[in-house]
Length: 214
Image 1 (cartoon, rainbow, N blue to C red):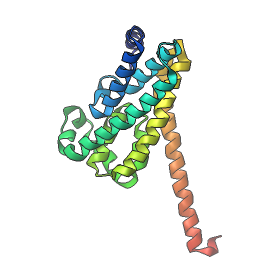
Image 2 (cartoon, helix red, strand yellow; image 1 turned 180 degrees about the vertical axis):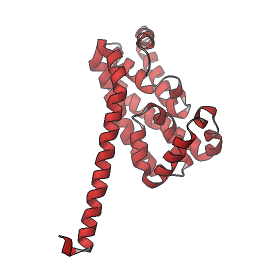
Image 3 (cartoon, helix red, strand yellow; image 1 turned 60 degrees about the horizontal axis):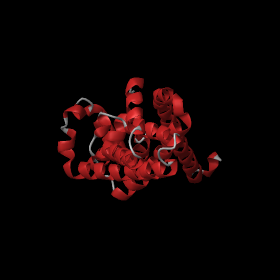
Image 4 (cartoon, rainbow, N blue to C red; image 1 turned 90 degrees about the vertical axis):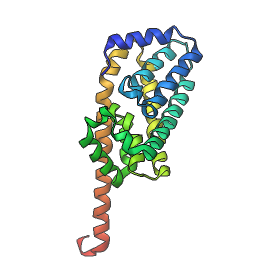
């Protein structure tokens, strides 16, 4: 998590900038989170939360912010996918990724089985948000499947965190502190839902194959 002092600093700096520069900075950081791996330095969700607060103070428009955040997230992840697709070996050799090689290998294996689910869920955790697009490219996941899951994740994440900041206002440090837990809870809920749907489909398939079990 980012400390409250850093959040206050970023909030002060963004608040002092003209609206167009705020938009540009947010787009650059959200885009660069996966495309340029900026997320290892400053998680995109912190930038979006702070920009939401700036919007609540009337400096920028919350609707425009939501649109730009979603577009920057989707386009940035697409660039990250292309980097992973064309430079997979070099990408995995980055020192910061070598520390998590076992987790990355497991993620790649899982993505080859249920790629879209991994892409969508990865949007809601800081580390995976920065590397998941590249891993999708490394695993040779079809781009259309990646794009659909990526767009859905970017849409939900971008609007949600923009509005968290917008309506949270002075409670930003607390929101940033607990947003990680909220993201984890959402991921767990989604995983349970996916597993549940998969189980019900298997049961229904078995019943169709063996009418005596009805």
